[in-house]
Length: 349
Image 1: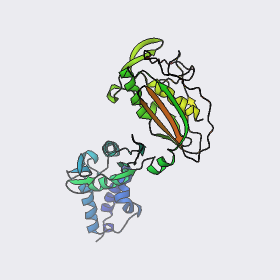
Image 2: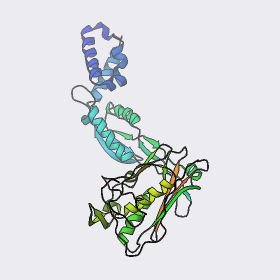
Image 3: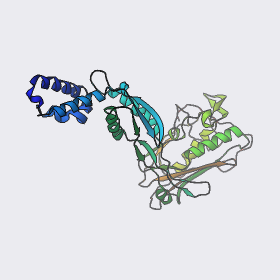
């Protein structure tokens, strides 16, 4: 006996499925696509019962345990994601669940880098949530009976700089600059060292733009930056991260000497002692930034190091690069020991 022999039953069941399909496209794709599109299929009573059981299962109490690499990270109660009466999925809640899971699953990749002894430290891949596969598994669990468990599927995120590329661009030096600072000023020296480490091993690909503020990030005590002398709007004061303008200024002169395209640079309102007049680049989080663009057809590598009162930045690339260097005045002497103030103001050059 088929459902077609009872037209009233067909009308009710067809309405129910079309209502589900109208309100929930994914429900249609997973369960009722064929049923609703065939018009009036000749379903047996056995199939009819199976369909009703499927609809009923979505309303059965239960939970879905979600794990990452064998570790439980979330529990989703079925009732929170399925509307009452009709088993319609709540897309908004599922999207929020995906966002939260992505934060727990995500592992940032690490680029290959050159270590303290000039050795190449290999890259490490990262991971992110495979949202498509997770949706499929999650929907299947919602329309199953009882409690279920899911191992959150992951997608590999590859590093942008691998060991082979790094080995290819580490030997030919196309730019270099050194400045000096008072190593007796411990807090300022510490800040210079932190910022130098932040930009060290940066690789800028052809056409890519480098931003000092983006790479170094916000200068906060939680990241290790300390109070050191700065000048804001012409007044001396203490500020978190004082001294990092020497790093940005040294970087500016090194990349300018390498012939890279300077896109954004702001100068201090008064001369600073660590570079010749007009050769500085002030930076401030939420304010001035220093940016440049790699206009060559080969990637460039930034090497930065601060130690013993010297701030050094070198720019390297492939032997295949054809570059046009610029003449840049250098620093010819060490600074007197008493010089320790950094000058930071938000004034455009």
